[in-house]
Length: 601
Image (cartoon, rainbow, N blue to C red; front, side, top):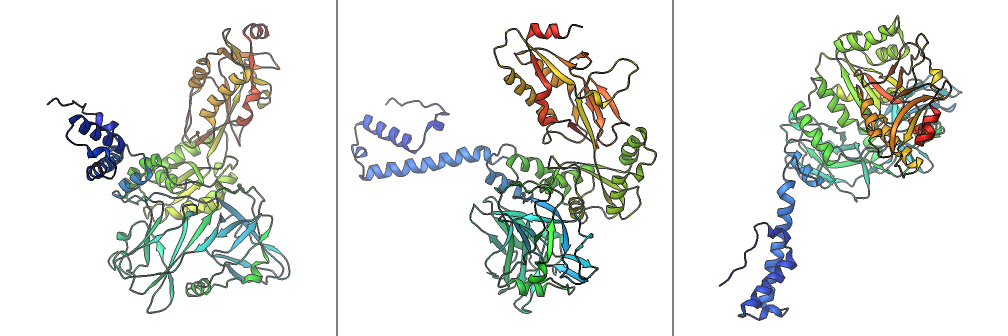
């Protein structure tokens, strides 16, 4: 009997219906059976079963043939499962944060007070919540007083705290409680608090989130939290060997911050002296009392209505969960560090991974880097006493517990484009997160990056002084090719994209290689461009190609230089193109003939 030869890869073309059709066709050609043509017959039912099973097998074959490999997986649930073998915990969504200032009104008497955790302010229907207790002291009676100890040191997070239904423990080793909510409810990854009421003492205990249970002893009230493959949170407790085990009958309650990512970002001053509202629920007052180990003087609802909140900095952006590519990049680095920070890469990877909602880029400088590069640069540009500069002195006093040498120095660029430096509460948040993981003899101090500004510039005649006043009339003159059929605006937009790829806030990095040659090549590779010149419209002078003036944002008179070739910035320098959003106004397109006439002088 003749048999049809099927190519070894043709099975990839089959699904359940195509296989069913093939089986029926082969039976019809055989001429022995006829029931296959009658839906509902026994033979038709057997064919359906075989076809559906085959379809399921094909689905899993297609999914697992590549999705089981760390280097090739593209589906989030598969990547999440794979990195679980490395004990890596992906980061979920993170809320917008804003540093605040508070003023205690005249109805608040002088005393020590505590703003209770989960209290919130509301502006235009959007809530911003305190994630922990905040302590302050009012010194005067009968007048409003700004609490300077809190100024820009406390962060509020956008969202409101919610209470998850009570869970009664079964008493299992490493018992898991699932925080399962509707997929449309977004939770801030770093704002999940767990409380356990011991059935013997009948008191609530606040448990502490840790990276690894196995690093903790049997009596420690700790838990692990993991954002799993279904984008739900798993709360994992101990087993009386590593972490305290839940007893049968213990009650567990979880408070989580519900976030609305679609709300507009809060601008500076947006809180408008809003008053504070105390959070409340049936269980919350008892929890607050039981966990008040230092007898804090919590403000009641009336007192909180006389405490007013404002913000001098804008809020950060909402950030979604780690993507598959981010997990692929971060998981091996985290595994190598083993939740211990020792090398510069360990610190940088940990900060980028865990504080990506507030950090665009970060570099760690050791003592040699700090003295021989950072401080040397400041001396070289003419500063006689760099240690006395306001930013350097403030960071040293604010964040250093030791001397001003033999430290590690964290140089970070904020994620928000219009925020120049990390504000004090953001720096403190990162440093506090680092402390439990760093080597005990190491002190980490925050420093601010050096912003290097760039703009089009035609070098003056020999002997003349470089001056920023020559920036305004300088443009990039683009001469169209004779064969160009596209509009001037189309060419301008293409060139703007090229500059954005190099200098946009999200693409720039500390210590970046500013590739002027690549920018020039990319522009000239456009079919519509014949040549480019940097042109000063006031002096009518020009230079072929791209010429940039680079200068220090804070010390422009001390450090400025003309660049026509590529630049490798020091690791503490961050490039910024001057007025990048308006760069299109500095690009002028000329037809070939007109342009040649214009530059003849």
